[in-house]
Length: 311
Image (cartoon, rainbow, N blue to C red; front, side):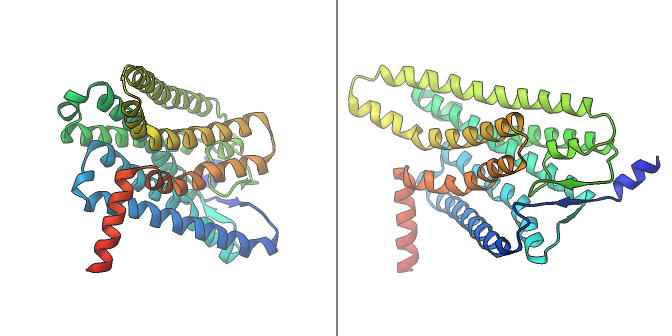
């Protein structure tokens, strides 16, 4: 009981990206810039979609939610990291660490599931175009997003509540820039067998399931596109999937990189670099991918810009 009471009052130390004092201003400027670009870029995507009635479709409804999720996920990590750099403090409270972990898991899981919904939306649009508006009706779209939010919240709460049963050793140093679940489990003095089983189980269910759904959707999409007689028709059908495929490749490619770097190597530095790409760079690039590769988005952005200039 005494060790548990000490655990709840404990503080963790986040080592961050570097302990070199000369690098701190550079890191602060770099990650502040990345954070501002991420927030402003995704806010612009949301503004463009909500202001243009032509974009009030299931595909862009899911994209709007994806942009909102990206803003929330980076806001969970970056402000605390910037505060630690600015104040030269590495401390995060036990409660703050669990809260950061919980919210980050929620938003990363939401990203994962929303990309699956977007793949399903493209599958229905290309493989069942005549029934698209009936199948992907607004009520179903809202319901699907709420189900994704529920699954993500339950997953995050499971991990967080399972951590509450653990007691921790004296040296509570996390070699990372945020409260990473695997790093927290490594510091526990009590048995983490059930926690590790939970991590593997949820990773399998929420990893293999959505990836299988995306692969199935694009297998059917490619099969349908190949049956289109004209080359122009094939290109037009496939161009609607280009942005989504790019984001999926970036998201799962970096996620796999984080997993492999933590599983194959014991180097904390390589794991941190992979996590930076996964948690910060990917949300920053998503608005550029959708705005540069999507004609509808570029047209809506142009109209919004011209309307703002002439108003």
